[in-house]
Length: 261
View 1 (tube, rainbow, N blue to C red):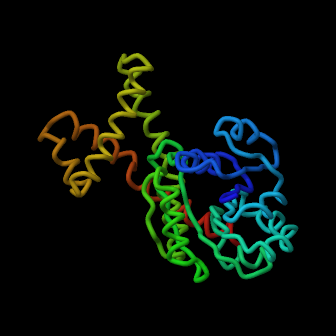
View 2: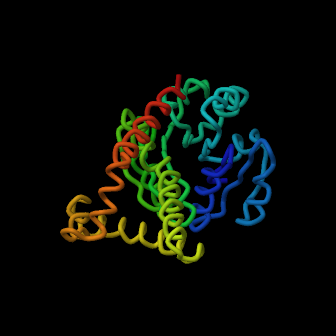
């Protein structure tokens, strides 16, 4: 088979759904068996880790960083014979560490996806080692074209990239929930408040991407002198809104680096 997934939780499942828009020539596996339902939904195969290692040409590694060594070491003999492309999405683990755990020199692509790839609105930073050919990388990127933005990034910056796009959806969900809670406090029904908040975040993000303007300039355009918006901006500043967002990204980046040690 072309692809296999060893570990298929929330992130692996999101990648699998995006990949399924191009091909279902893949199989998945996980420790808990929860991915059996996903395999039936796609549909695709559900095999053991050993079967995936021996049958698949390209293998997504969707296991937690602290589990990676224990997952790959028992497969070293199969990997040495098969020589598949390994695609790791484990935070903090370098491509060199993946090769070490695999026990042999293999082509490795490191990606840092986020869960919106499941609906084609994700962000995936990627890098590759010297054994990944240009043709191999081109084909891989084509297969994930429905995932969203795929952007090359030096491996030394991958942890930082993941801190904003990989973990960022959690922060955005919190912001949407908070906006909606504020609207509910002002009398808006909950369902409408959530819809308004989510659509506003989407629209604002699209404005930044479509116009290329600095977010500060777009913010200033909404803030009339002495108006209600600048009063809200002042309230956010008084409560350390921007500083809190910056600290969240920095803390996440630092934790990503710790996971690889």
